[in-house]
Image 1 (spheres, rainbow, N blue to C red):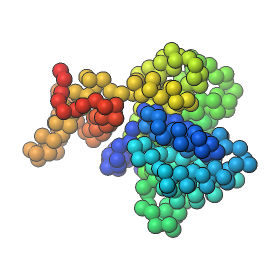
Image 2 (cartoon, rainbow, N blue to C red):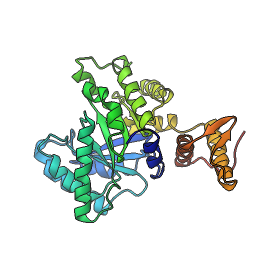
Image 3 (tube, helix red, strand yellow):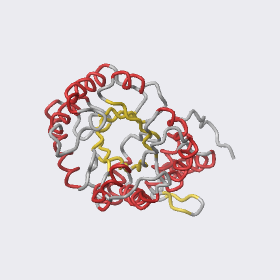
Length: 310
């Protein structure tokens, strides 16, 4: 599904903020418990890179138990599984679907057919265990030059896909490039993924800034991501969360415009209008979606929306 039809499907899904996503290793109960108390929007329990081969089974069980009995209620919870062609994939998928997270984060995606195959397998498991088919979202990690080349097809591969994210370390390795703080080596890749997400009407999550001691560098990198149009950023340490959240929290001007958009949409509905304009511009479904996301971000940041400040 591509284009406007996909945007309309996504418009009916609940909006979940993804300003910050924090990984918590599935082999560290302490990290998993601590991560619940930070301010990240998306908590990602990890079964992949942070878990050694000898602990994959234990991590899988630990995450399942955490999701069943201690699931955070105020966060969008995802689980990163091992890659499609790994020996751990099928066992991961069986356990993770039964844990019923908000999303499954798929590493090393390179082709749309991979996403479609995984989505179909998830649907089979959902049906087997009595879960609502199609409810679990997918977030695709783009980690290679081939993933960048196919980003647009991946972004629109399946209605479950709600976001793409760029993994700069793996990407630069696949390109034989050197990873730098300025990030010029991944500038094209960031834009390619961003454009693919915008075309599909889904969220775009920016690369990690790996130096946890360089707050000024983090601010510069996050400002660039915000200005490019990303919706959020993956962080590698809790101290990065509040800095990144501050950039992806809307300004009062953005809030005011979002309120005006929704007022115009509501007035149009009351008057039975099929088309609505604001300041001479047509308000269509993607603009309405963006307005709702802006207000959801503002509410998450504790900004009161009971009146409009001019």
